[in-house]
Image (cartoon, rainbow, N blue to C red; front, side, top):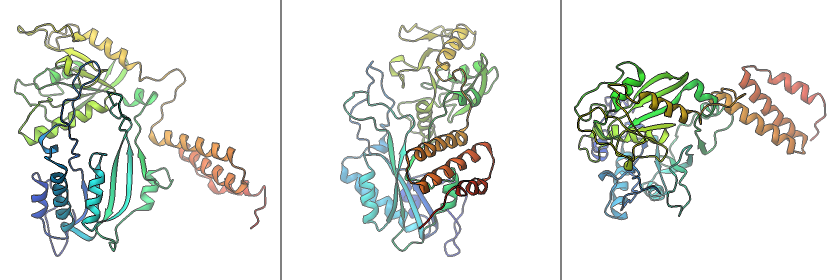
Length: 401
């Protein structure tokens, strides 16, 4: 939001509540930009299970359930109407969705008077597999960028977007890769502790970190957001993440946000320690840990990979050994280099441009590809010198009409 002399509003705040009612309570024409992440209407009629029988932690909350497509369309038109009312004449909207809903949202956008500028394909680096093997893996989501109307003078910072894309024009397909190999050696292997409330996640995090990094309590729901702690185990850097307990049903809105973030963390993690029912593990590759073997009421579970006690330290050495065994798959091989994203992208672009130059027969295009490759090299090593390269290149041949 931004201030509007004709419709002053209080800025820098979070409004928690029904989105339509909250937008209807705002003054007309007071917002520059709306980003909407509406319910996807996933239409999950049954539980999803992995091939070995484990339950998939899918979104099946009430807010994503609609009686019919018409009900969903009515909801979509209602929030779009509210969003368009509060947008300034030159405002814009971004909305994201999957194949379940984005086409209906796009049609409703146009019906409401919005002017679509682009659709962006966000390619996921770690999409959830299709467990039944009956469809393609759903590996992308779609974002729609639209102006309030066809006459809107929307804002687009072309130079900034190009700079974010290593000085190459930003395209409409976006890919955010996970770091791999040597980058994990430098940045840390992501390991998430997940499970139901009061499963012992925070206690185990503190034991692995060697300090009281997380609050431990017998009260369910003590951890409501992700807590990240960098540690070194066996000479390898890890980033441990404690998460909110994955309760089946919660009436607490803040707790539900924490649960959603916990699910996202599980999907994105390199390694998952699952401290719940082994049959409900959210990932096939998770280490299924029975974390309270020191309790009087503990009953051994033959399906757990390992039983431990973070209090007494029993079997903690074995747990770390299993973590290290998992970590080896993410560590670099001999001779690998640790690159951050900017360096990796520069190397990738340099190779692409050199390969394009090798295939090209037109000297003008060859020169352009070589210039782009040199630009990528300069960005990689932090050196400029484009003019010198061009002077040397173009001094060798003559260009006519």
